[in-house]
Length: 145
Image 1 (tube, helix red, strand yellow):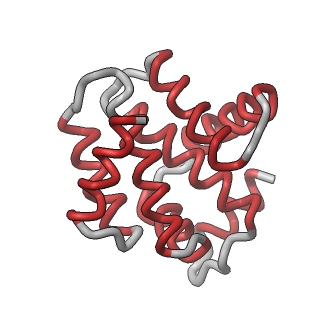
Image 2: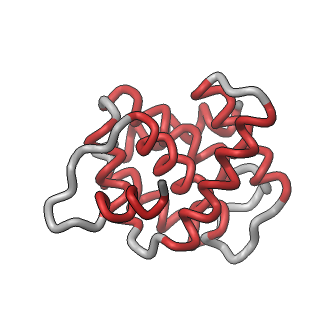
């Protein structure tokens, strides 16, 4: 399944993602954010699991399985831009704001905003078509959640 998703994402003209692939790409994006500062802390993993369980209505085992698959995908996917754009194409704008909210909850989970995480958040928000104001509001909601 991962190789099929890679093939679609890295094709010259990638096709829109189906719901399952979009879910994996979003999960991998959260993992990439958590890893972007060189640490992948338990509190960040817990924030990813919470975000995935809430977004997709998954039980603990299904959430863990999705995150683990996303960890493998993220480690093999060198291009943040492509899979972020694929999420944009697969997720309506109002849902992309909740994606940014989930992303902020992961970034803020360890209580530290590393420069690498901030830079990646700016890139991701822009690629998802979420403006700075909406990203900042999502950050506030993500920090409260």
